[in-house]
Amino acid sequence: MSKNIGIAIGVLVVVALIVLFSLVGVYNNLVGLREGQKTAMAQVDTALQRRYDLIPNLVETVKGFAAQEREVLEEVTRLRSQWSAAATPEDKTRSANALEGSLGRLMVVVEKYPELKSNQNFRDLQVQLEGTENRIAVERQRYNEAVRNYDTAVRRFPGNMVGGMFGFQPSEAYFESDTKAKEAPKVDFSR
Amino acid sequence: MRRRNTVRDVIIGFDQRILLGTAPAAVTALSCPREAHTPFMVARLGWWCCSLTALLVCGAASWAQAPSDALLARLQPSGHVNDFAGLLNQPERDALETRLKTVEEKTTAQVAVVTLTSLEGGEINDFANRLFRKWGIGLKGRNNGVLVLVAKNDRKARVEVGRGLEPVLPDVLAGRVLDDEMFPSFKKGDYPEGLRKATLRIAEILEKNEPAPPMRAAGKVKSPTDWAGAIIWFFFFGGFGGMILGAGVGSRSCWPCVVGAGLSVIGLAVMGATLGATGLAIGLSVIAVAFVLGFFAGRDQRGKWKGTTTRHAGFGDWVWASNMGSSSGGGGFDWGGSSGGFSGFGGGDSGGGGASGGW
Image 1 (cartoon, chains in turn brown, purple):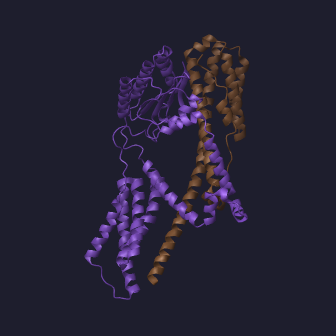
Image 2 (cartoon, chains in turn brown, purple):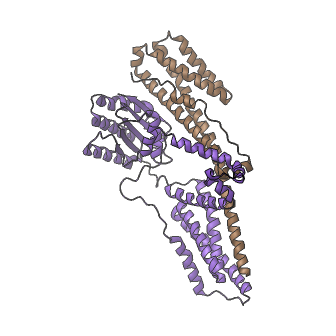
């Protein structure tokens, strides 16, 4: 009889341990997802930084052929420094979007200067700028995915229990400009 | 990678069943929300409404699938060259495939050439990036993949470069591959020539710039967290299992033997799947130690339980027990070796590098 009790206790201990371990797993998963969100945000910043680094070169090249377009060139330069000075994430997003718009205008202006357009240096810069915009779009999309994964995990069954116990909140911090970034008027470099 | 996931999924699924088993109301609420008509169930349901909302939103999102998403979901790689649009004939395809295999052997970089009739409304940059990720072109961790994507009817092409190759094949160079090699031929309608030239140029750039740093079985490199996770699971299943098994053998009782052997197998499977042969070796030695501990404890127990004098274990018992312990490790576990032919790409990622254009 006592042997059976011993086995029963053993089985209970096993079950309890399995439950405990899976709770630990859920908790660790939530922590990982929350960290993933931070990493994704950092990636977005890296991509924006890349655009930032590209601008002086671009402005200089355009100046060489179209110095009279002072207005738009100055605007780009101004927004660039505004972006780097932005302190809060909201400010950063806003100035990044403004910069995106003003770069688009610059590219329209450039259409008037065939010599500039055929300049190899400028063409390379265009490709780089396009690549940078694409990286920004990719990283924003992934950031949103990271937020979605985390939020889903916090709201779904085991996660909502563990999350409630340890104070995990859904972040809902989706990239506001995601749809805009996807549909941003693409500068067509092909003609 | 794939192997580890499978085992982990099995374990997670297992846990969840047990967790759910402790909350039967939750099981009912989660599995049949539409049948929850009674007030009692509705009250129960309130607690789960958040998870249900999330599930429903997910469900709705997966229903509303754009044609380009459906296309993306359909595409499966059959080699380096995937000519879905049928722009190449067999010899042309084979020539490119051979060339790209050579590149992979020399540099470990993986190049995928994909032709599509249409993107089905998708945007080429977005589509290329998602296809790149879905197929995992390039090795995991090194991200040394390149995707050449051509959409014939959209008249658009893109060279998408994995993060690891961005220094070797920067956007500007990728753009030139398109402008100088591919598009001139495409404009004349000579697709095979354009594809050939662009592929050869990329192969040349990769071989010239990327030396082949011999990397042992890439994609199987384990991060410290994998180790830690596997060892924790193992000590739980394997250590415990070994002890119970030992106790069972020691006390000559049937149940603990079965339970212990089962747990040991699970533990060994986790170790083997995550850490390979090393894991198995570690696992077996830990189980052996646990077994010995359990064995003596069980033998003492047997004396107490049955009220008989303690019988010293004979050599025969020990042999039987160790055989049982070791045979539990070999039980039908799939080592997942890659069989001949194309075994898929290596799980590389791309951060949106590269260039695109139209002709």
